[in-house]
Image (cartoon, rainbow, N blue to C red; front, side):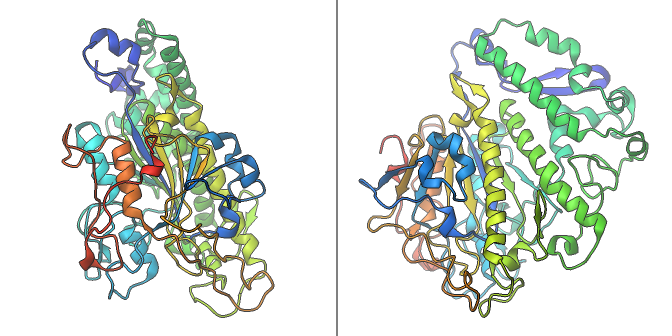
Length: 531
């Protein structure tokens, strides 16, 4: 029995089912039955208020300090309190500071192109990266058949460098999937009959029947297999999560169903008839930037960020349960005006991060109460990350939880949005990737000396006046070493082959210029269980 099990139902519908170790053991005893290791990257733009984000920790013993509920109480990370014992906070990493010295480019373009490649960007090719990104390098090794990673994003589809983080090769952008229905279809095959909107399967879906109903006979045979209690619980969790997910994805009104065409839902992210968790119409660049009023587009953007984003989190869990992809990224665009979930802003996030309310940098603080507005966004993202962590931690797998077999990293574009600094990055890692990483509940200083700063995010603006120095000093350990650690954690090797030895280097260089190469190879032992 393969790890990928598909149930078949009425009208040719297929449904990806969970991998069940206890069943697998009976049919392939000579093969390993340990759960797969996975990497999940949760990416956000524009930095944060570092002074409110970092845990209140000042005393380290051998570079390690306990992460406690008190250390995040009242701060940005407070929503993660229930999962604090499964979270590492690595302090002191630096991303591409002046990577490709001599390249005078927008700091956001540089950050995006270099973030997961540790390489220069090509000014002549849309400022795209000149190397494959981490997600593709990892997916090639740990995904079945070397399949591409699953890259997701809320909002509008984009190939612009400010929104593209994934590169399948030098100069080749890998745009994110923005419609939850597309991922749902990959897991179920519900809309694959005929043109996608005809046939018995589509008819039954329109009648609000679950895909589980369509595969009822096959599902009953699947559940009748002799399996452990843990696997029984996995199947139940999978069923409940699938029903919850499809409730928000499948069109539920006669008007939307009758209006569906092959060019519309579920494949086109800008279709006017994709309902519930998917945008109900076109999202334009003007909606994203907040500079072109359009009530319908703004509503669609809000729907995508809230219902759509939460739906993607469910789909990430389902994808992992069914072992459909082991390298997953979830992105939230950075040039968005927050007008949902009780947040009512009139300036987009990027402008707020500058403290000016627009694209200008420095000078006077241009928005009253700007620090609290930034903090609202920071806390909203922390809540979404906590939702993902909590979901993965609620699903049993292999004697532990799904979260335990992953490295689920919150990775930011910048540290502070006004300083555009890339040192002292605010990073979280939930889960130990099957025990390779150190158990959670720790803040770990990865620098060789000194105590990482929390930055100066609340300088002058707190009292009005001019924007002060919002950055920080120190925190200059190359992020390459974090990526090397994570690659080893999920089972990558130096050669890409089994038994190929540990990964020791990633990227073109780890200093401030492209000519330096990798000067500090190896992983961060402090982050591993062995350290």
